[in-house]
Length: 135
Image (cartoon, rainbow, N blue to C red; front, top):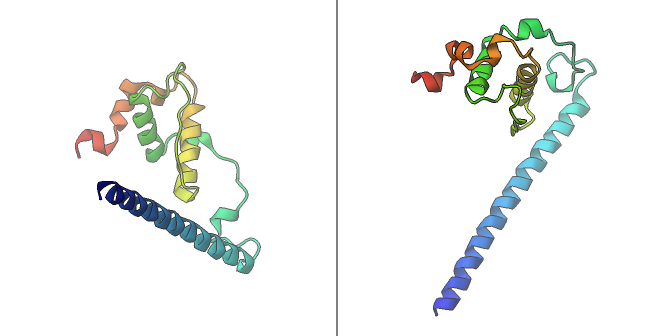
């Protein structure tokens, strides 16, 4: 009986994993179909369709003054991720607008001049992320 109970437990776990995988695929398919429908109905040049615009030139000088950029730099600098000898960082993003913004900010941080103040942890500390300030 113990072996059969173990087999049933393994089957239950497998069924749960299969259900979860099926639900994930179903959600992805639904989102893909909705996006495809949107693209089919969107007019060319729709100003609200920010996901389909060609990337424009980025003003890195202005971008490097943005609070979100400074927060990201502080986070990375405090962990040594912006030092010249730091290994590459890996980020996992969904591909949505917020993910694209973070990817652009991370690229700007990684390509900032080596002597830029945001690359140094002591200077970056003034922009410490809220979670590390205890607020």
